[in-house]
Image (cartoon, rainbow over all chains, first blue to last red; front, top):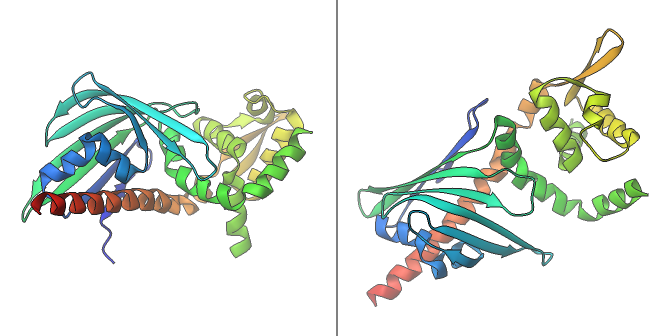
Length: 156
Length: 110
């Protein structure tokens, strides 16, 4: 099966490059990133603020399966319609350092488009930790109860 | 084999142990130096170090009277396929984007 989303994470580098081709015209792909109502739908998040302009900022809020709310935010450094968004990304109340994201939108033939996201992390170790996060979360969910018990045991 | 694999995954599912791996990734350290980075009691950190050593994510090296802990890059490589859940997460997110925008597009045309 052909993978639509590709991840390039070279060893020893503090960046990740995510590429994806969309069966959507460029304008629609870009719109998905700037219209708050649309962002909410595909990101599964609440958009508290989204100022799509240079020096603008954004703040989103998600609610996980346990009902906990997580907020993340960033500042937009570069904004070029249908071409480019450069922004920071930070998860609030976590030890994870802020990251820098370069989003590049390109038109492809037959009304399709391509998105390239380059994410730069504070260090190689930070990057590797972020790469492992979805996996660790999956494990955490499966072992949630077990871990809770273990944690309580550890604390006493 | 399966058991060993699962142990490695469980080892790094713990946030403190992940933090230890991150620390040691930058330079090899003694147990005392590692423990000084955590609020947890020293025996708790020792236990974490023992688990990480048992599943070979860390290796020990005697240097004079001190034991230094190193990251075992070979073992870390084995869990390199950790990137797949990360890729999947983005893939699912982008699939959603595509679906949402296709609906949006057809609504506009109507």
